[in-house]
Length: 558
Image (cartoon, rainbow, N blue to C red):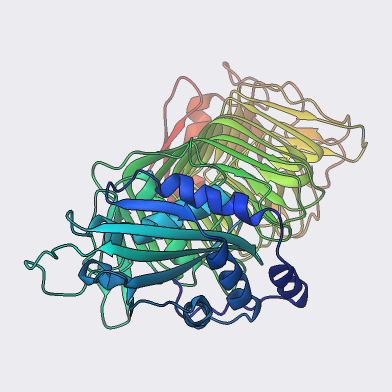
């Protein structure tokens, strides 16, 4: 029945003193679980038990695993009747007691209580109808979460269902199934489980099991699962650091999760549905998400804070706000150390005035791949700001076949329609019909239709900007690139712009080759879109993408 049998829950010295001394809030916390359990089962009476609370505080003060704390709790209770395994409560005789303990991480007592009830549901739900029971409950605050205990006394023995001769299944056991989710093997040889989720309650049950240290537990949203999280409270991101990242497969199965809300969870822990992902997150839509953070963290995103694995086929909408100084902020992922493909953000805003910010990804730092992604109708605002990626940080990174349309990009240090600052490779990408502008007054800021700064080993190939104005500093604003630095290493090949009346690269840029303006008549040094289309496709031929459309700005196909 215990979800976290191998997780050591050691408590600090200060917490030990607090648990032994007690606090006035224990009764109020216990009432939370009592109120939720009361009335759920017609043959179970519920009461808050001060003796259970005292025994729980004493047991938890010594720390250890849940099994160890549970053993001490039972001993502390000095039960006069018989003591039976909680999962066999339905077989109990009059006077027997079944005791269980759940530790739930997080800062929301209501969510913790609901998680405990979900874990106990199979036991309470299987009690004989002709039996009578009294549930003594207690809930106390521990370090990083809550201990929730129940001591169920058999007042009258019922008649067990003889049709089931096997042991009762716990809510995390393979073979368990209810209206919210089911559990089966993903890989029995390695012990990897798969939760098939139908409801918000099922999703929370899976998340709690993963947070208990079962980082490789797979999840698939079932056919009927379009999940609404708007009333479930603050979501606790999954994963605690690089070494405790999600490593399973989360398959959204083309379904939608609405109303994910994360508000200032924890200092120095990344923010997203997954704080750290080193697995696969795929085929998922997150609509109307709200992410708000003013704590010191490295990475903030709707799907993933820090991606070390793969994100594919995911779409998001909503708002992301990060007011602390520094960090990387993105619509799908804050920072990407892995692969992101076939993803999008449509409708919303990504704001981090003192951070590196992108409509899709804040920071693409090292050997990372971004392919076939787009951003539409999104407001992006940051220090280094890009419609798609805030900063593409090293020459090993590639961004291919991506586009940004409508919306706005505003930066104080630099802003680009696709990327704010580029040191990697951008191939076959474009920005169309959205504004690019400066916040602040730094004279060295750079603003470009494709990239604000293209520097060090940055390469732009077969890209264009069309149909919107660019307003920035006098010297470092261009239809393709605001500032193209390092003539010998940073390069631009077959890139075009239209709709901006200035130059292709900022006036003080050291290298202005590879940029051509597109006009209707193609007079002088300009070309028509038909001519630009040929140049784009010749340069993009090895990428697997081609541009189509003759009369207006071309679109991409693969």
